[in-house]
Length: 214
Image (tube, rainbow, N blue to C red; front, side):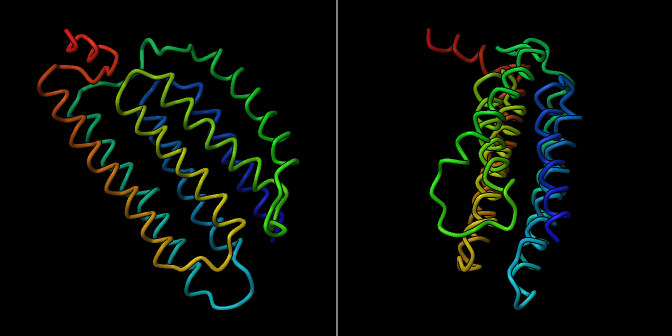
């Protein structure tokens, strides 16, 4: 079981790097969608012995929302905005990958110094969760397109979700589903916002919105 968990977590890390190094919005959306699907499987594999109902519901919810619903909303936003690439991010893609490597090393170092409430199912859970959260924050602040920033938000939530599922057993199902609902609402609202930004200004470059200050 641990081998499967480790494999899923390594794939999550690789998807983080694929998003960091890609300018194509469609590829980034697919990467985050696949990441959400993998985390759904991780939810099921990481559960403790006992009833399969709770981890099964969480796994299906994660796959349905992160792997299907969110990507469909974002693909629709891409079509409505008629934008395909992130052309000039604040931080270039080669430098983003190098910074991603540095962040991964920092996450590995930090995970070895954090006091944990319980022994995780895999030694990779904490560093991968931290790395995914840090990459999400980096995407939010280093990209200009609103859609890419939404993807960063989703990656940040994926990291938090990984940490919670891997370490905090016994959290009420209602709370975990509530977190997924909050993320769903946030992405839905952002999709509507992107649509209206594009309709009013013919672009979704958040940097250019600063011109409205004058």
